[in-house]
Every structure is written in C-alpha cells, then in structure tokens.
Image (cartoon, rainbow, N blue to C red; front, top):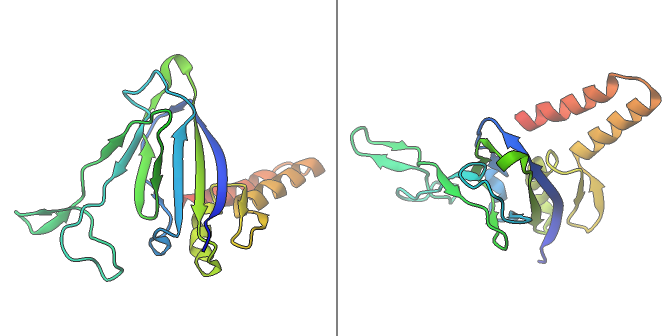
Length: 190
C-alpha cells in the first residue's frame, strides 16, 4: 500500500498559558497514521514553549491490544505509576513523528518579545479505506481539508462547520455561524 498525505497545515503559536496532553489518534489507528511536526526556523525562546510528552514505557507483557503498558511499577503499592513527562526541544531541520496514543502538548510559555513560533505539520496515513473511520476521528477536528484514501480532497467535519458558519454569516443570519463552530469545538473537547 502507498502512504497518503492526510493533511498539511501551518501551526503558529504566540503564547500558551496552560498545558494539556491530548492523545493523537485512537488506539486502533496504531501506525496507520503518523504526524510530523517541524519548526520553520530556530526560535530564541527555548526554555519554554516546546513539546511535552508522556513516554510509553513497557512494564511487562503487552496488553491484549498488542501495545505495551504505560508507566513504571511502583514497588510499594504494586500499581503502575504514570511516566514522568519528557521534553522535546524543536530545532530547525529536525522533525518529530508520532502515531497513536502519543500524549503531548505545547509547554506553557510565549515567544521571546512576542516572537511567533511557526511549524509545518503533516499527517500521513494508509490508503487502506478500512482504517479511515478511526483516523478520521482525529483528522476531522484538526484540518479543514483532508485527502482521503481514494485520493480525493474533501472537507473534514471542521471544514464543513467552517463552510456552514461562513454561509450563515454571508446570509446575515448572525449567530448561526457561531453555533456551527461551537459544535465542532465541543467535538474536539471530547
């Protein structure tokens, strides 16, 4: 099978106040979709505003889904403790690539003296149509236009909501556009 480019988008960040660690893709996606992120240049601010992530740490036999368990064994209680957060510092000419179950976030911080940090972000996936429903659950909320396994470019759920909001605004119906975008926002937060 040949890889398909699901989406390409430019990410620009001026500041981030809080960190969260969303998981990219559902567990079933595995390595059928990958995301690549690289900065457009080296930035002055590197003490914050980088990538924070939770590493996968094998602590025994694979789970029934074939993935290793996360965390490390806590000898005092016999429980699996969450792994410590790790840090990836972006550097021009280098990229990070990840698949499903990669929990990550941009660190809180801001560009030096208001400097905006811009990144290229590419998502690549399989051309196996049977995997698309699981992949689309992530891509539908992150990109406006997505190339499907058959090679056709289509609007994602986000793209359809943006188009509906624009139509409402053009018709002068006012608040309807905001309603469409709110439904996408609610979907993203699930």
